Amino acid sequence: MTLIRTLAAALLLSIGLSAQASDGGSGDPNYSIHNPPAYAMIGDLLIARPLLVAATVIGAGVFIVSLPFTALGGGVGDAGQALVVDPAKAAFVRCLGCIGEGFEQQN
Image (cartoon, rainbow, N blue to C red; front, side, top):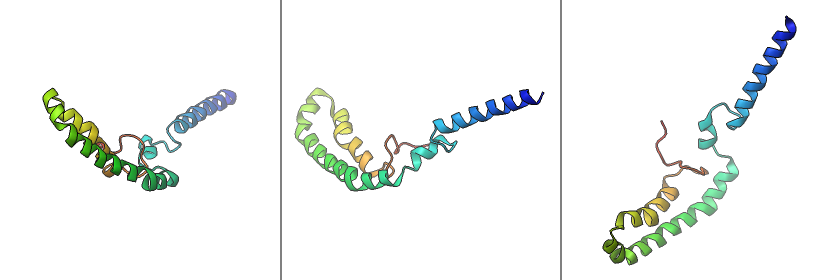
């Protein structure tokens, strides 16, 4: 009887450890999203954010230049979203070091 209990305990322990390792090791899937490592934060601050701010400014300029053509085609909203809003959200609203959709509301 102790052999069965030992095997059952080992099985449950291995299932629990494999589930914990699959989501970043913490047991909480949001932990890996909201707490990136320090090197990701530094790289994001020094490299990605300045590039995203530049992309926002350049995208705004391209949007203004292309506005007459996009207005004729009816795609002003899509062009504004792609050229200005998306880079601005990634630059100013996304959490530092986050890779994915960090600016959307989490429940």
